[in-house]
Image (tube, rainbow, N blue to C red):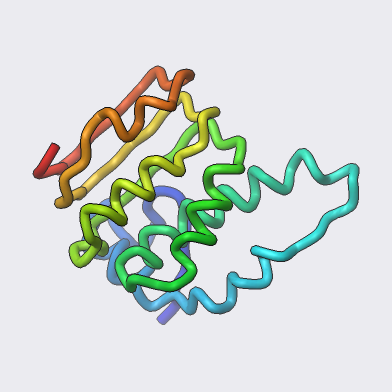
Length: 146
């Protein structure tokens, strides 16, 4: 069976959060570590933060669920990205501590215009996303504790 990280659902997930989190739970995060140190030519520098941000957004929930030591690296990469749209599916991160959730939310890039958070079971306050001055749409799905 294949594993993969993606923004949103893959076709095999059938729009079921449990399928997505189970699939992503098996992704070998260590394979993404070289991206943390990747250098691109100057002409491609405008694209690199977006690419890194997309990968970080996909890896961050898996890393958080595993309490990975790389979580701070991924959140740092995410905060420096220029992402305008982000979907965080927290379904697989049931063991994530409240302080880790706060750290993750405080690392969201200020360029975000649309943010979707689903299946968050950990407490967070809207103050933790107050730095998102460009945010126009906030979608919360199955978030049990705000």
